[in-house]
Image (tube, rainbow, N blue to C red; front, top):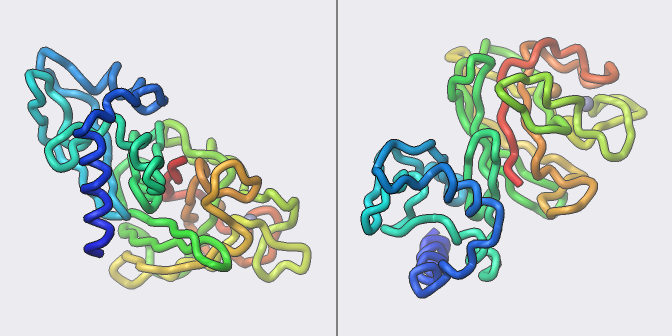
Length: 249
Ligand SMILES: [Cu+2]
Ligand SMILES: [Zn+2]
């Protein structure tokens, strides 16, 4: 853990020593136009995660007369060129436009329900045999719930926009289907009596590398109302989509 903190400080140090020159990437363009405001008015919130830890705040940070949301401030400086610098130092940085979330290190997923209320989070990590998903959520009914990676991000809180299960190998649905399974298929989540779930799952045949056909970046996680039977094509009869979040890219 100490090593990770040290690395983040280095990234910010690199920023302080002149990384402002590197601003020609898309996140900088987005935040420069609508997050900074010289009149000091409230700006649109950006969520900010470092290795799965939520570092977002509601405060506004004063930077030489320019107001920036504290959620894009790290160790007393603004976030803007961190992506470029971090990647030069071998630390991946991810951005999800629809939820305005930045992740440094581990991609973090903000989960929300159909009303758009926050309900938990998930982190993704590359491991030897695929991608490990760690999820923590609340506000679900006890029992089993289908849980998948869907092919598209959720747009404007419309869970249908997530499309079908992520299926780059053109197979059928279900971990128990002889003609399966989708890369995005996972075992059911088992929710406790108090409506919470904490789980760790592996998605085999998936990667977090950019530009790979089996990459999970830019897709979404979806939790369903009912149990996934793990064999009925195309979605395991798991009912409505009730909770989800976007995987940054
Ligand atoms: Cu699903
Ligand atoms: Zn499926």
